Structures are given as structure tokens and as C-alpha cells.
Image (tube, rainbow, N blue to C red; front, side, top):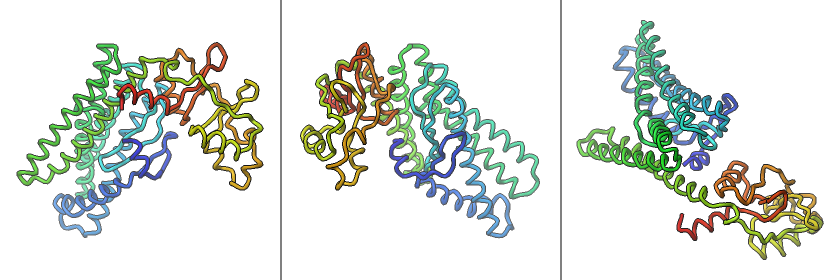
Length: 372
């Protein structure tokens, strides 16, 4: 889900070191919200103003509402940063916003604190806007701040619905995790609850549509989105538990095919990449390991220079962070590869190189085990 949001998003700002992204679907909801406020809400709440005032007020209100969503996600992010978790970005899209946090909370308490921070921030904004509403006398400003107070209150309450991966669902996971001391069980249980709640959204949405109530379509869309997100979380927890219960030594390859540092690109392409079909190879001379070379490095060199450029000029020097022990869980190796965006890691035992573990190797193992 995050991948699809990332693909259709543009970066518009950086806040607290976190990129703020706008997904293309955000522009759709921004336009619809502005139109609804300008054509329906403000003329009814504050009549006899020029049309341009309604449109300007609608656009300002929509922007402030999305700023409230950003504030909500920043609250999650601020607490997550305190637990040394990395925030990849915050993305605004048609259903609101999402902070993409790399890794999982270390403890049930961390999960609870990160999850509750969002709704608490929305309750806070609802109170602030309500106070401003009571202090304003201008009809337009009065309507604007009432709307923001009400929507932030709804946002806080909605996010507390116990449907994973919403904030309420994460609170449920924190509770089950604390009680059972089993993160994967807690995730699956919270995800199952999230799927059931999303089905209720879709059922009530269909009932509303049947009776001609337009909000039913929105409930169906929200329910579908939540179902897909909860199902993805369930599948991810299942795979994580599988990998956590096997060791690197069960998945790695011990037959290391390496290339010498003095070999040229064209030779490596023909005799290694095309022959073996791997996406990368370790560069080694007489048992000494230097780093990895992948197709990405070869593509950075003009083709006419392939017969002159050697591996020693293009390989990626080895980083100790890209090593795992053969006794480590395979899950740890996969997390390192995903976090560092690498396709393979060196497997060592007491300082000696004993093999490689790759994403493709893990995928093949899961396929054989029937974990798709």
C-alpha cells in the first residue's frame, strides 16, 4: 500500500526532517472539499457574502484541514522518533494521511504511545479551534473554525475505531501484545478485527446506497481501503513469523560465485550475469572480499567502455552493517536488506565468510513452504 502511494506522490516540503508528500488523489479530494464548502457549507452558514469569499474560505478551510491531518501524523512521527524509529515520509492522499515508519515499535508501550499520539493531537486541535470559534464574531471565520473543530473531533474519534491499521487497531495490538508477549499473534488478531470492522463499513455503506444516502459510497471506499490494509498487515505478520522461526543458515547459499576485481564489465556480463542469472556478485581476490557488483553499477557505465572498465572501479565497497550471522533469524536479514535497499547480504561465522543470503533466495524458500 505504501509503495503505491509512493509511486504517485510528489514531495512538497520537509518538516522535522521528514518529507511531506502529496499523492495525486489528494488533489481530487481537495477540489471536492473546496467545492462542497464553497457551494454548500459557507453560503448556508454565512449568507449574503460574495461568491469569491466562499471559494476563498473553502480553499483555506480545506488547506487547514489537511494541515490538521499533517499535525496528526507528525504527532505519531515525533513519538516514533523518540523510540529511534525512522520516518520515511508523510503522505497525504484521498483518505487523509499516513506516516510511513520504517520498522516496528520495540515494545507494547512504544506501540501504545505512538498510536495514541495521533488522536490526542486531533483532540487538542479540536479544542483549539473550538476556543477560537467562540472568540470570533465574523460569520465566515466563525463557520470556518466551527468546521475545523468538528472535523478534528471526528478525525480523533474515527481513528480510535479498533480497526487495524488505524490508530485504534494499533492500540488493540499493543494491548494483546502486552498480554500475550507475542507480537505476531497480536498483529494477526488486530488485523482480523480490522478486516471485520471494514466489512461492517462496506455493509452499512451498501445499506445507505440502497436508501439513496450518498455517504454510503464513501463508507464503501473507506471499508475497502481498510480491508486491503488489514489483510496486507495480516499476511505480513504471517510471513514475518515464518522468517523469525528459521535461521539464516537455512536459507543462505554456501556456494559463493565471485568475480575477480581485474575482470572487465563485458566479461562479467557474458560469463556471470547472463550465465547464472543472478542480480549481483561478490568481488573477491584469493579469498579476500572487497564488496558487491550488481547490474545497477554496470548500467552506469557507457556500453562502449565495458571492455575497459574493471570491477575494481565500480564495485560497492563492503559495509559491516551488511553482514549477518548464520545463526540470526532470516527475518533480521530481510529487514536489513529492506532498510538498506540491498538485494544480498554477506553471511559470516566468527569473522569468516560462509555464504550469501538474498531476497530472491528468501522468496524461493517462502514459495516452497507455501507462503506466498
